[in-house]
Image 1 (cartoon, chains in turn brown, green):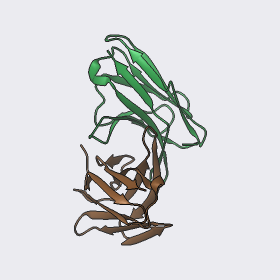
Image 2: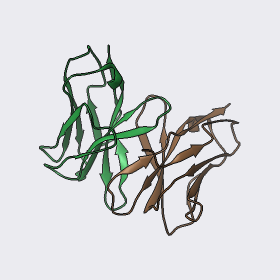
Image 3: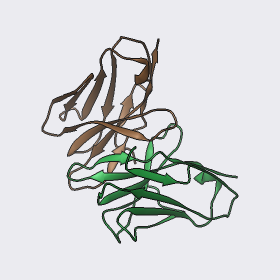
Image 4: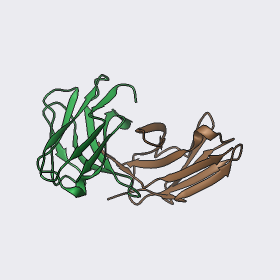
Length: 111
Length: 112
């Protein structure tokens, strides 16, 4: 069953604006990961945050993790048309080789 | 998606036919996974492998079989295809120790 749930399901923003999406999960995790999927392509790993980290940055991406609330957020700053994609969170539980993916947030960046 | 290839890219099957999907990697990772992706449902794990010669069931294994005879290849078989198996299938490889995954380009399968 899916562990993570993204919110919102869909997001439409103007180029240059920031995009924020959230992920909630149910059980204790070892780490949480975010992936991007462009239409018709495979998923691409964006960023990983460990359970003992609260915030992480990678270029225009900022991820936060609140283990007390079992939630994470992904912020994309200064969005570009190329950021149009679906974004998925995935959780890795302790001592488990598998990831549990959410259903994703579809982001559309308008020019 | 460099390092993970999937064959074929597209396939149309009739109900009851069988086929094998091939995933190949050149990154020497131990962990390999097969997922299916259906609209609005994200990714669901079918089977996975933690090393050569090993396989394990995921969330939705029924109707599928797998084999990992060589470390670099992970095969997914459909013995008797059903319309419910119409989906996009993704192979992924996993990196120790945090298991971030690298995906292939996908196989779009239609069963009529």
